[in-house]
Image (cartoon, rainbow, N blue to C red; front, side):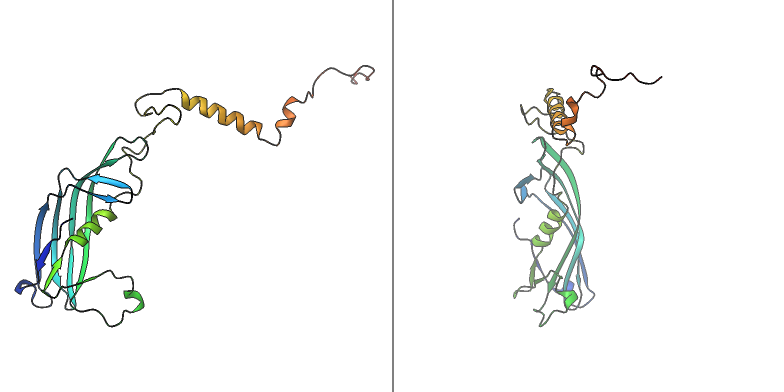
Length: 196
């Protein structure tokens, strides 16, 4: 994402001052790990900048329609993102962070009194991107034998694989050796008949 440089001017001169801004970015896409995503409608954001005294707090909402690739069937997977934007830009580097502030993520206001909002927007987008991307919750995926999309057709291999798994499970059972044991066969010759 290209930088979104905003000046810290008279609108945010004193603690408590706020500046509301909304915008649209024609961002083509982004990546998370090995996943590539496109943004056919770009990104819309609505953010409020607040002078907190020690820095500038950026809070708001980011919205985008995202298209990726389903992890199971490799077809298009689409989802909408409504993400909370949360960025903090300190005026000065803190001398020492307390234990609870170690986890606080922040940037510094630059020497020319500007901030770059793009990092906070990218973080919001990434945080709301699913780790496992699916075209639908019950996606059946691809057949491991022939590669058919099981959402569109039943190639029959799934039943064969399940039958083979069941046969393998029965064969590996510790009681499998008893399967061939004949417990109700004929009486050996000379055996006494059952008492009536």
